[in-house]
Image (tube, rainbow, N blue to C red):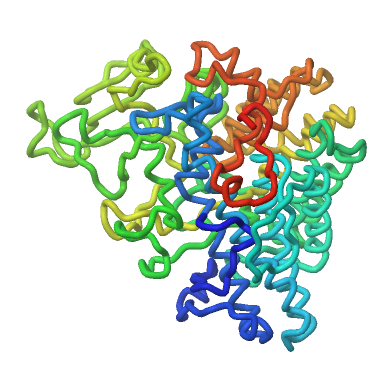
Length: 577
């Protein structure tokens, strides 16, 4: 960011690339001048731009690195960000990815502020005005929520800034949360019961986010309120009990939730839209890295470098191998793989020959097994060019600071994209931000802390029942799997056991979906230690981030922000003065 956030002016060449498919068919570029913002079309354009700004976070490498990497679920792959994975103090202060959410967030918030400020006098119909402002409130709340969880005290801008300033002052976490909740309390009532089109927020989106905000604030040492768990529970349960009104439902098969071309399914509460039009999608190989959705690249091992007869292709994806799953994720969270079907629906463990003419062994045809990861040390005999046991890819995890030389591991398939125009192009798939399954998990966690263990267990078992379903398996066998998996859910009377089980369940359901770091920061063990610290310090085998310090539950404020502010602008504790 070249100037401090108070200098962010959307007047300057704002790119209005909308997140909604219908609008992507139109010419989306204009200038958001104050005069233009006084018109209905100007406000609509600003709203489209606010949706587009969400692409900066959802699907990008910076946000993935800050929310997925360096947790108990994913560690550094061969080309991952070392500073974030190891919580290297000096490197974090200068690492570009650490400050991107701060820099982008204030630009995006200023655009949302413009919508909220100018809509009342724009001449649009009152009914449309109310919805437009509610959409902008949701977007503003989402940005502030992501930022307050990363950086703590923020500068709270709720008005459109068009006058340059060199002064800025941080506002308490408590005040930021009050503003977020105020926006969402209004939005949940003013948004429609059904989305106007894919990618638009609606009442279900706001209810879900509001429940998550309350759940998160509940554990904050200075901002938390005694009523937060009840409010989290009430908002989540309202959505669950009125699912038909909002048109939402859990899909029967977990495999369908992330199936390509199915991103607008009934379980999705909000997604950031994309288009196959490469200009408006900003996804071509030459596109700037910031808005392109490259989520399908980050979790992919370099499969094409391991055996002859297997080459890179569009279905198998571009292997950037930024992160690799940890032992915890594969061996603890996903330890049970018979009744719980989510492991095999989350990870790719088999690659087939697609270049038989150059196979390293004779007799292999296209479609035969090239690489297989059975997931266990002892496995049935199989014909494959290469078979990798867990010890081979786990033993390759070397000391912190060294690169992994062998790029093979189970590959998360949630973001696979079969519609990319070419091998190196970024994804054209919408990015799923919130799902109805998480609503049940939020309600369950809140219920547990409200000392309603039976309700917590029942809510968890709704999600776990779906996890037991396997298409093509006899109904009786599926029913037996449901009985076993639900019986294994603990009673939820012990909060320490319960929160660890919920975190494990969130891994099984939500791994890689840009939320784990947030989950570990907000949750606490019985001693009150944030789970981010507890789990990284006690992981077996040790993770690169095992040396994490107490203050790493926040990210440092970008130094550029502090340098360009003429009044004193404090750094977060532990990161210097």
